[in-house]
Length: 443
Image (cartoon, rainbow, N blue to C red; front, side, top):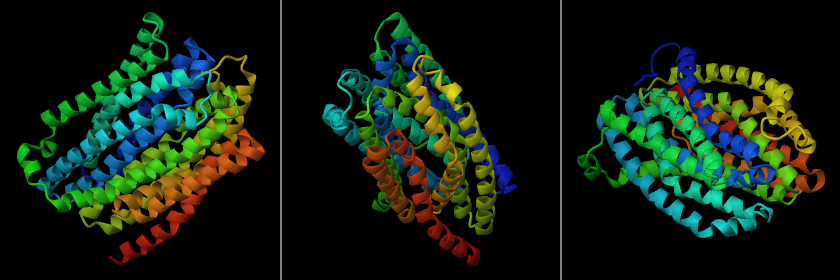
């Protein structure tokens, strides 16, 4: 456990962020290894099949992350207030609500999986493979939800290192299983999906075992569930559902964009899916600073250290923007080389399209770094309205880019979707943060 209410803010934030960054890196390695192994062993068509499901997977992971992150903010506030009983009640409430959400989500996606792929205009040459791969992902939703819940609860009490260890182990397992299932057992894209499912199950079980052996404050018993009240459910739903909705609106925007890209052919789908994977790695430092800020702010809010919150946000912005500049320069100058890891040098059009994507997105990472800090700070304070509106704005901006810009400018219009969404979201979040800043100063 780590108390974030004492010590130099920038140092505490940075040290808490580093394991988060490495953990998020290995989280992305799940999708990265899928694309890398499939692209190199099964070819461009299989690569496009998995790439066409990327936005749907983002929807699932985003929902799981948003919902459980919202729950963990309340846990972090109770931990900052040194109230162990409320910490356990918060965890028990989160387990119950996450279980219900898992059953509903799994059932709905299984019921409408094929129609969704058809509605997204997934190319007919890859839709069968895309459907087969994604069925395994849906089967593993319970593991995705469980791991996100357990890891977010550990982070709520200041432990960002333990989930990292389990992620590293499961990522290595995922890679080895993919090679085994694809190269030895010849299972094709089904092998990639099965490997991901099994690796996620292992990581969630390891996290659960660790909590019940090493973390007394999170060891909930039957009595803790019996003590739950309606107000507990209301508070958690009030914070968790809006955060899940925010993540979903971003993912829905990505699905709308994927819909437009699918109509442009396999080369465009392959370029978008591979370049976006590299892009997701590049933005990890900014995302990690944002996630760290949510826990930092929540704990200090619970401890009533309002001046410390303001100081931490200021220093967090400085750190995040600095890393965003480095990341932007890196993808602009080295993104093309990384792209060649996914496709052969003969796929010149795919490589050229990816290079365009990197220039447009990399030059605007600094805006995204501000977005992450503002959004997670407000969430750490328990404010959900402005971040939810910001998520809706992101959806609108991405959808407009998909519907209009893609028609007139093709892939370039699609590549502008991210930066436009970031700018719109920051413009929504900034007034809310400035208002919160003034209130915190008075307090």
